[in-house]
Image (tube, rainbow, N blue to C red):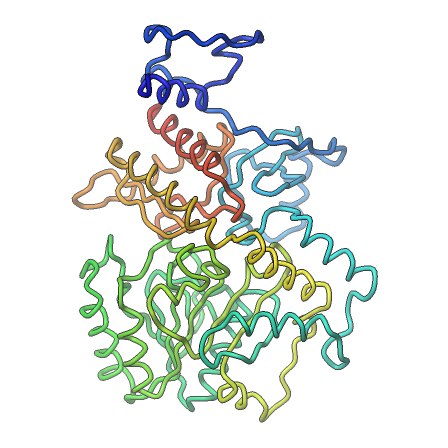
Length: 483
């Protein structure tokens, strides 16, 4: 009977109740022959978990009109997902709604930006209240919001990371961090990883190491070392072998002195690649001996998303000299930050340093509300619990389908890499594109990453549930079975 109940539960989750039981009240039989088989259940389209929310009727312009206006008035470098772009008009927690009121499971969180959930009531309340009082004044005047937020953020940092600079994005944060590293060290050379993404400005393009995001301009005194990728890397998970490449670069490609080293702990745009265990501890030691500072890019991994730790760098057992953050810090507000030590911060005092919108009262109020929500709702522990369940189910799917080459990540920062063969790990670019569209049809919105766009990036709002996880995996199962 336990086995029968398990099959029945799967069937009910994956099938539309109307398909299974019609409109009448269900009567469950105890006969095994009356219970749908597991294979029959997989043939039925999975259905979104119930959600007690009704979106407001949308009366604005429709997708086709918006798309034409966008093509006419916005830059041609903008890209969009899906052959027929979605017109998303409303969001609530882990769900999005299109112009027709259709609900989608958001497994990408506005590119890993919506941390607490779309339109989280506590964040909304803080933002709305501040909007009524004062929207903007800059740091030439005093205001409690920026000071309160800085204090709360500094309390989340280890060691002597206690000085906060507020900016508007991850790109700005990494720009400022690189400036700090060069001023403090007195050196110019920066080291970054291949497959990294650190921004799209003229300077941070230099740190980024994916050709799809790089324009042919001088990148200036930046070198990219071999990526410590456990799945595709030439040394597998052997951190010490990757570290030798860093030392070789310092020995043969520099004066022996460098400004700094920057890395994401789990590469985001690069396809949710977690660095080889122990890598950062070894590299930080080498870089500091060469006079450089160590920068942790926490734009995507921060604020408990990895589940096991509040900050991604903590998974490697290190304390950086500078930490950059954005995206989830504001739950969708244009907000970023750089946190460093008093010693490094003092180098910035030799000139005036100012950011017009950094620490804006509205954004600061929203950012402080995000920190409180993450703590109050125990989102870090939630990410650990739900992420473990999701990873387990995805790895079960990996055993079922050859096309899934790797399932990786921590908490709710997960990548699923698709390949056409396991030996050469040839990127399954065409198949990924087909599955991407199919998942949207089924009501699941995921991201894509990696140089070849063959990695599904699963990084939802941190209110994502186990039922959501089951639906996502069932949808992926269904989509792959139809390839």
